Amino acid sequence: MAERVSTSTGSELHEQLSLLSTTSVEEEDGSFQSSTGNCVGILDLSDEVLLLILRQLDPTSLQRLGATCRTLFRVCSCNSLWTKHIEGSFEVCLAAPAARSVPAKEYFRLVFMWKTLFQNLHCNRFLQEILFANVPYPPHQYWTQWLVLEESAPLPVVRLPTEDIQAIWGICHEALKNVEGRPFKEGSDMKFEWRKLHALACEEHGGISKVFLYVLKQQENNDHEDLETMFQKYTVHRFQWHFSYWLFKQPPPFNRQLRASFLQWRKHNKRKVSKWGAPLCDVEYLASLHPITADYWKGRLALGDETVGIQLIENYFSMCKSLVAWILGRDWGRLKRRKVYEDTLDGVYLMLRREVWEGMVDHQRFWEVAKSQMSRVCTLEETAANYVNWKMIENLPYYKLYMVSGNPVYLGHLQNFLQRKQLVHSWINLEDNAWVRNLLPEDLFTVLEYHSKISQDGLHGDGVLAQLSRLVWLYLNSGQLLYLQAMKGLVLQYAQGCVAYLDELYPLERLNNLTFPSQTDGHKEQ
Image (cartoon, rainbow, N blue to C red; front, side, top):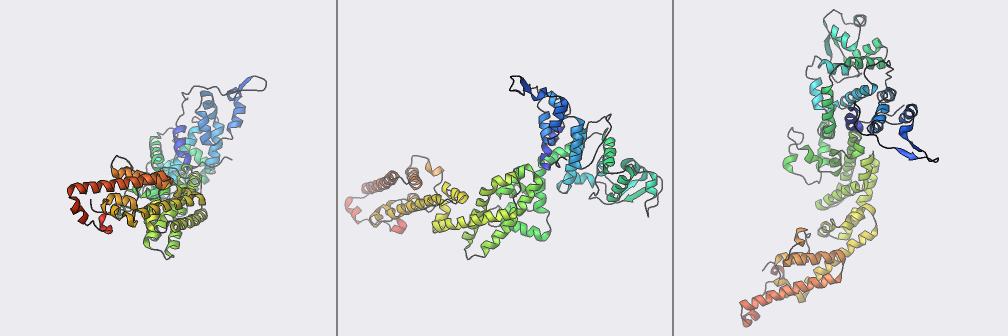
C-alpha cells in the first residue's frame, strides 16, 4: 500500500498531472554499458518489467519520470499504476472496467485537488464563500457532487428536492421513504445532515469505493476549470492562508498569549501591529519578525508541508513562552533580559534551521537547544563585562560561531578584541595625551572611545574620520601592531596640525596663555 500523499506535493502534482497529452520532451539516451559490451538502457526493458519497477514510485516521482520522454510518459500513465495510488492515497478501491473513458490518472488528479482543498477549508476563505454562499441551500451542484465524498461537511443541514438527492447521491426512492421521521413526498424538499446523506449513499451503493466511482462517473463530462483555478490559487497562497489562520483565529485567551509571545522584546512597528487581525493587517510584516515564521511564509519549513510547518511554529512559540518565564525569573535589568531573549532565539534558529527545513522538531528538542544557547549567551555577557561591549561584539563573526559551536577558541577571539579596544581607550586617555584629547573633534574622539559600532559606510573615503575608522577597525579585528602604530601616528599628526593652525591664528605669546578646554568637553570643540 502506497503512502498517503502529502499536501506538500500539491503544487507540483497539480502542475504535472495537468499534462495529460503527450509531452514534447524528446527521448534521451538512458543507456549504460553492460559487462558483455552491449548497450542496455531502461527504455530497452519491456513494459511489464517497467511497470513492476514503477509500482515502487510515489505519485510525485512517477509524474517526474513520466515527464522525461514519450515512452516513459506512456508507461507512467498506465491505469494500473494510478489505480494503486488512488487506493493508497484516498483509501478507496476503484476497480473500474477496462472500457472506462477517463484514465485513472485523471481520476487521481481530480480527487487529489478536491481532497486538498477540502482538508484546508478552514483557512481557504474563497472556497468557504462558494460552499456557504447559498446557506441553508447547498452550493452549486458541481461542488455538491464533490461533497458527497466527505463523511462530514462543515455545512448546515442541507435542503434539497428529492429528485436532486436521487441524482447527486444516487439514493433511490425506497431508501428515502424508509428514513425514520421524515415524510416523503415526490418533488418536495427534504432536510438532511451531511453525515446522514453520506451514510445513505454508502448503504445504497454498497461502500465508499462505489460512491467514489459513482461521483467520478458524474464528473466525467463536467468542466473542472473552477476546481483547477481554486487549487492553483491555493497552491500559490497556502502558506500565507495557513499562517494568517493560525495567527488570528485562535480562541481569545490563547490569542492574547500568542500575541504577547509573538511581540515580546521584538522590535516592531507599533502602527502596523495596532492592526493585528484586521482586514488591512500587514501579515507579511508580522511574519518577518521571527526567522521561523519568515521561512514558513516562503515555504521552506518541513520540505514545503504547510501543516507540519504550522506544527513547528506552534512548538517554537511554546518554547518562547517557556523562555520568557525563565528569563523573568532572573534578577536582570530590562536591557539584559531583552538581549538574552533575542540572542537565545537567534542562536536556536541558527542551530535548528536545517532540521526544521527538513522535517518535524518537537518542543523538547527546541528547549534543549534553547538551554544550551542561553548558557552561551550568558558566557558572552560575562565576557563583555558591560552592555555597551556586549552590543558591540554581536556583529562579529566569532560571536555567531561561538553561539553555534560553543568552541572556546572563538570566545578567546572575542576577549582579544575587547582587550585591544581597552588598549586604544587607555592610550587616548593617558595623562600625556590630554592635549590631544582637547584638540580632537567629537567624531574622531568617538571612534577612539569606540562606544558605538563603526558603520560600514564610515570605512570608505579619504577624510581623516574614514582613515581613522579603517585603522581602528583593522587593528581591533586583526591585532596587528602595525595598524595600532598607524592609528597613533594619524591622531598625533592631526593634533599637531591643529596646533599649527592655532599658531597661525594667534601670536606665540598669546598661544602660551591659551587655556584649552577640559578633558570632558574638549573633544566637542573643533
